[in-house]
Every structure is written in structure tokens, then in C-alpha cells.
View: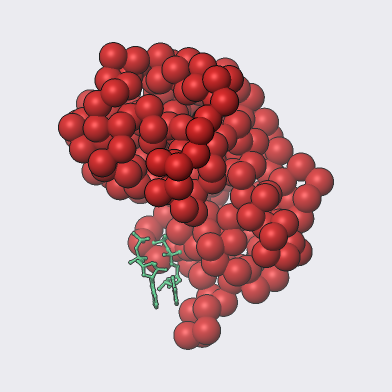
Length: 237
Ligand code: ADP
Ligand code: ADP
């Protein structure tokens, strides 16, 4: 479970991107984060994994307040958070399988995946994940030989390879066509419920969010202006 408590961020420039945001994402829930450009969506996601340092507030993942951790602890705790990106962030010259395995390392030194030997249990798990996202027969292809939708499937499998307790998903379909976008959103929602994973999905496509998210949080000028099921979403958000 993820619990944000009074999360605020004011950048050095004086821009207040988040004001006192509190919300809880229970296990298995996929939450869509919507709002106009500049509303604070990216800042919220980045404060959770501390790519951006919050000005105040708590980020509780289970019992751990990520905001209070020192560098070494933070590196360990970040492994509990799976990240999925708009532009996939795959290593192009590695194979699909190698990209998925690299999820076990966390996200910093990708190139180390060349050097590391993986235990058989990691490899078995990676094959299971590739099967789950429908890429089994592409396991040995280079990442740069895949379509956009296939690349995002690799991104999803890689995030799951690290056995995360939370998924943070930043505009996962912004580079995909509408049909592929729906397939990816369906896969993400299924995976969250199968694995009992909480997820926050930054998604600017409101109809897509309404179709797939169990819950929508609307941000505007750094504040939560809507929090509820998609069918109750009004113009206010
Ligand atoms: P969104 O993702 O909803 O478009 P952002 O989180 O990117 O919103 O931005 C929220 C506000 O914070 C905006 O006013 C933006 O200009 C500001 N902002 C974002 N990143 C920075 C930064 N690194 N430095 C200063 N201001 C920033
Ligand atoms: P997006 O909303 O797609 O994330 P943005 O234009 O908000 O794109 O942000 C692009 C990058 O610029 C981000 O790294 C963000 O943190 C940074 N940024 C956004 N607004 C500002 C700002 N006012 N000052 C400095 N950096 C900013």
C-alpha cells in the first residue's frame, strides 16, 4: 500500500507544483492521475521515488517513509518501486530477455547487465513474464527491432522482474496509437489485479483513463480536485 501524507513541492524557482496532497492507493488498485499540463502530475510521480525531493510531507510505502531515507537506504528501497516510462527506456542493443532481466538490477547502471550472471530462478521468472506480456517468441530479438506496443510490453515485464510493491507509470501510451494504447492499458490493469499491486498511472488521455482506471485523481495547480470512480468524473477535474 502507498500512502501520501501532506506532500508538497515548491521548486527553487518559486513554482509550487504540489500543495498538501494526501492519498492512499491500496494493493491491487490502479489509479489514474489526470490534470492539465503543469498540474503537478510528473512532480507527484517523481516525489514518490525521490527523483524530485519533496519540500514536505510523507511517502509511506508499507511502513517505510521514503522521504526520510538516506542515500544507501533509498537505493535499496527504490527496488520496491517498478517504473514504466512513456519512451520505454529500453537498452536498444540488448535483447528483450536481457532488458527484462535488467529489471532485477534496479534502474541505474543498465550496462552492468552484460556482466552479471543471473541465477536460473531469475531467468525462469523472466520467461514467465515474457509469456504473460505476449512476447515469448521475441525473447532473443534486440529491443530496437520491436514495435512501440511490444517495447512497452518489455517495459512492463522489466518492471515486474524486480518484484515491485508499487508501480509508477508515466504516460505509458503517449507514444502509441489508440488501439495499441487500449491493449497496453488492459494489460496493465490485469497485471495490477493479478499481482495485487498498487499503481499510479500518469495519463493525459482522459477517455482512456475513464475506460480503464478503477479510480481517478484529478490534479489542478498542485491540488487534488477530484478523487473517485471514473463514472463520477465531472468537468471540475
Ligand atoms: P504536469 O506533469 O502535470 O504537466 P509538472 O509536475 O511537470 O506538471 O509541473 C508542475 C509545475 O511545476 C509547473 O508549474 C512546472 O512549470 C513546475 N516545474 C516542474 N518541474 C520543475 C523544475 N524542475 N523546476 C522548476 N519548476 C518546475
Ligand atoms: P511533462 O509535463 O511532459 O513532464 P514538462 O514540460 O512539464 O513536461 O517538463 C519537462 C522537464 O522540464 C521536466 O524535467 C520538468 O521537471 C522540467 N520543467 C518543467 N517546468 C519547469 C520549469 N518551470 N523550470 C525548470 N524546469 C522545468
